[in-house]
Length: 135
Image (tube, rainbow, N blue to C red):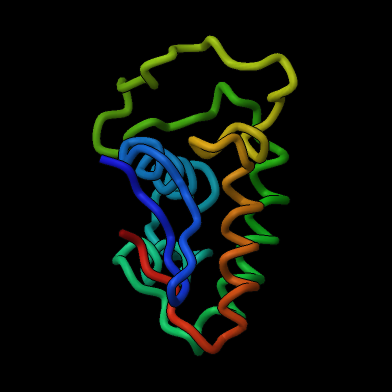
Protein backbone atom coordinates (compact mmCIF):
# COMPACT_ATOMS: atom_id res chain seq x y z
CA UNK A 1 0.00 0.00 0.00
CA UNK A 2 1.30 3.42 -0.96
CA UNK A 3 0.95 6.48 1.24
CA UNK A 4 0.69 10.14 0.27
CA UNK A 5 0.10 13.42 2.03
CA UNK A 6 -2.81 15.49 0.80
CA UNK A 7 -3.23 19.24 1.10
CA UNK A 8 -6.53 20.16 -0.48
CA UNK A 9 -6.45 18.56 -3.93
CA UNK A 10 -2.64 18.38 -4.08
CA UNK A 11 -0.83 15.17 -3.21
CA UNK A 12 2.74 14.56 -2.04
CA UNK A 13 3.98 11.03 -2.62
CA UNK A 14 5.59 9.23 0.33
CA UNK A 15 5.79 5.56 -0.59
CA UNK A 16 5.15 2.26 1.16
CA UNK A 17 3.31 2.35 4.46
CA UNK A 18 6.15 0.31 6.03
CA UNK A 19 8.61 3.03 4.98
CA UNK A 20 6.49 5.78 6.55
CA UNK A 21 6.13 3.66 9.69
CA UNK A 22 9.92 3.32 9.83
CA UNK A 23 10.21 7.09 9.83
CA UNK A 24 7.86 7.39 12.80
CA UNK A 25 9.51 4.41 14.52
CA UNK A 26 12.93 6.02 14.19
CA UNK A 27 11.71 9.37 15.49
CA UNK A 28 10.04 7.64 18.45
CA UNK A 29 13.06 5.54 19.36
CA UNK A 30 15.94 7.86 18.54
CA UNK A 31 14.69 11.45 18.77
CA UNK A 32 12.05 11.04 21.47
CA UNK A 33 13.66 8.45 23.73
CA UNK A 34 10.79 5.95 23.39
CA UNK A 35 8.20 8.48 24.53
CA UNK A 36 5.71 8.92 21.68
CA UNK A 37 5.05 12.59 20.92
CA UNK A 38 7.19 13.94 23.74
CA UNK A 39 9.31 16.20 21.49
CA UNK A 40 7.40 16.22 18.22
CA UNK A 41 3.69 16.07 19.10
CA UNK A 42 2.41 17.60 15.86
CA UNK A 43 4.21 14.96 13.79
CA UNK A 44 3.94 12.00 16.12
CA UNK A 45 0.44 12.46 17.46
CA UNK A 46 -1.44 14.56 14.95
CA UNK A 47 0.06 13.66 11.56
CA UNK A 48 0.60 10.03 12.57
CA UNK A 49 -3.10 9.76 13.46
CA UNK A 50 -3.96 10.77 9.89
CA UNK A 51 -4.81 14.46 9.97
CA UNK A 52 -2.87 17.57 10.86
CA UNK A 53 -5.41 20.33 11.39
CA UNK A 54 -4.68 23.66 9.65
CA UNK A 55 -4.03 25.59 12.84
CA UNK A 56 -1.33 23.07 13.86
CA UNK A 57 0.60 23.21 10.59
CA UNK A 58 2.91 26.11 11.58
CA UNK A 59 4.02 24.20 14.69
CA UNK A 60 4.53 21.04 12.63
CA UNK A 61 6.73 22.96 10.21
CA UNK A 62 8.95 24.05 13.10
CA UNK A 63 9.07 20.45 14.33
CA UNK A 64 10.25 19.16 10.94
CA UNK A 65 13.08 21.67 10.92
CA UNK A 66 14.16 20.72 14.45
CA UNK A 67 13.83 17.02 13.65
CA UNK A 68 16.09 17.41 10.61
CA UNK A 69 18.79 18.73 12.92
CA UNK A 70 18.30 15.84 15.37
CA UNK A 71 18.38 13.18 12.65
CA UNK A 72 21.48 14.73 11.07
CA UNK A 73 23.37 13.79 14.24
CA UNK A 74 22.46 10.10 13.94
CA UNK A 75 24.17 7.52 11.72
CA UNK A 76 22.09 5.33 9.43
CA UNK A 77 22.88 2.41 11.72
CA UNK A 78 20.51 4.02 14.26
CA UNK A 79 17.51 3.31 12.01
CA UNK A 80 14.53 1.61 13.67
CA UNK A 81 12.45 -0.07 10.98
CA UNK A 82 9.65 -1.05 13.34
CA UNK A 83 9.40 0.18 16.93
CA UNK A 84 7.28 -2.84 17.84
CA UNK A 85 9.87 -5.28 16.48
CA UNK A 86 13.32 -3.80 16.91
CA UNK A 87 14.90 -6.75 15.09
CA UNK A 88 13.04 -5.90 11.86
CA UNK A 89 15.13 -4.55 8.99
CA UNK A 90 14.26 -2.83 5.72
CA UNK A 91 13.80 -5.06 2.67
CA UNK A 92 17.00 -3.66 1.13
CA UNK A 93 19.04 -4.41 4.26
CA UNK A 94 22.07 -2.18 4.50
CA UNK A 95 22.36 -1.65 0.73
CA UNK A 96 21.89 2.12 0.55
CA UNK A 97 23.36 4.86 -1.60
CA UNK A 98 26.83 5.98 -0.47
CA UNK A 99 25.75 9.62 -0.11
CA UNK A 100 23.35 8.68 2.71
CA UNK A 101 25.42 9.33 5.83
CA UNK A 102 22.85 10.27 8.49
CA UNK A 103 19.20 9.58 9.26
CA UNK A 104 18.35 13.06 7.93
CA UNK A 105 19.30 11.73 4.48
CA UNK A 106 17.99 8.19 4.90
CA UNK A 107 14.27 8.65 4.32
CA UNK A 108 13.75 9.07 0.58
CA UNK A 109 10.28 8.91 -0.92
CA UNK A 110 9.35 6.52 -3.71
CA UNK A 111 9.82 9.36 -6.21
CA UNK A 112 13.34 10.12 -4.96
CA UNK A 113 12.78 13.10 -2.67
CA UNK A 114 13.99 13.57 0.88
CA UNK A 115 11.00 12.88 3.14
CA UNK A 116 11.79 15.83 5.40
CA UNK A 117 11.77 18.11 2.34
CA UNK A 118 8.43 16.66 1.28
CA UNK A 119 6.96 17.27 4.74
CA UNK A 120 8.22 20.86 4.70
CA UNK A 121 6.79 21.44 1.23
CA UNK A 122 3.42 19.96 2.13
CA UNK A 123 3.21 22.00 5.33
CA UNK A 124 4.29 25.17 3.53
CA UNK A 125 1.70 24.50 0.81
CA UNK A 126 -0.95 24.23 3.51
CA UNK A 127 0.04 27.62 4.87
CA UNK A 128 -2.07 26.88 7.91
CA UNK A 129 -5.18 27.16 5.73
CA UNK A 130 -5.66 23.51 4.77
CA UNK A 131 -5.38 20.29 6.74
CA UNK A 132 -2.64 17.84 5.84
CA UNK A 133 -3.96 14.31 5.65
CA UNK A 134 -2.28 10.95 5.26
CA UNK A 135 -3.94 8.60 2.80
